[in-house]
Amino acid sequence: MRPTTSHPPTRRRRALRALGVVATMLTMLGAGVLAGPTAAAAQNPYERGPAPSESSIEASRGHYDVSSTIVSSLVSGFGGGTVYYPTTRSDGTFGAVAISPGYTAAQSSIQWLGPRIASQGFVVITIDTNTRWDQPSQRASQLEAALDYLVEDSDVADRIDPGRLAVMGHSMGGGGSIEAADERPELQASIPMTPWHLDKTWPGVTVPTLVFGAENDSIAPVYSHAEPFYNSIPDSTDKMYIELDGATHFAPNTSNTTIAKYSISWLKRFVDNDTRYDQFLCPLPDESAIEETRGSCPLG
Image 1 (tube, helix red, strand yellow):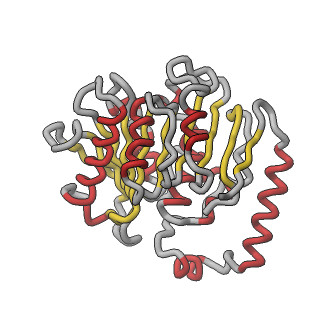
Image 2 (spheres, rainbow, N blue to C red; image 1 turned 30 degrees about the vertical axis):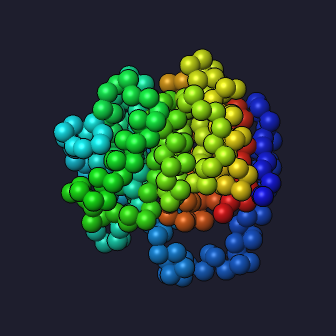
């Protein structure tokens, strides 16, 4: 079992992060990881896009131009949605991510994540659920159905690597993303955002999981949802918990730089196996928008 570490609530020493980043860069230089783009691409065929920076993962749009296509509500297994994908074909195939909204919500509530993540080098589908009242287990099944649709039946199937898939979700959709990870250990990443689920323990989850909690969440309070979900995932699984400072349950429903930058980093690290993004995750994230972080460092 690998040790997990944590940052205490409120303001932390940013100097520690700076020192950690320097140490990480020195280690990478010593190992020859920064040998150049050609060498890096040869070592990791899934690497997509230029070397990242703090500004590139915080930007509202990434390196890739993005197009979108509508999925009919008559599709089998989920309630339709919107697919966002990089327009280029010169970089090969991409990993894919399915994102579910929360209870009573439509895909419009999480749609901002679609083009933002796709522009970083992913195919993304934001889904509508079969009914607005579907529970987490139903949303898990629909996230899985959406991924199956992407790789088997969608117009962009030839742009997707079917071995590199991930799920995300808000509220009951977040609970659904945990359950989908439990049901499909072959997934590469799961990102539950202010998740809600009646089942509080997930000892069988082996999929790398990033849990977002919100300090002022009164619908899925962190002490009864996000925190026990995170704590129950085995320490042998790569996992991270980020609690948003002063945020409510609905933080994922509007453009949020903190959610975006760490979701992108997590997806890049585990869907693309891109260790260039380790620097944003380890040492654990430390900024004013974050109340608390916990996680497995080093990753992998």
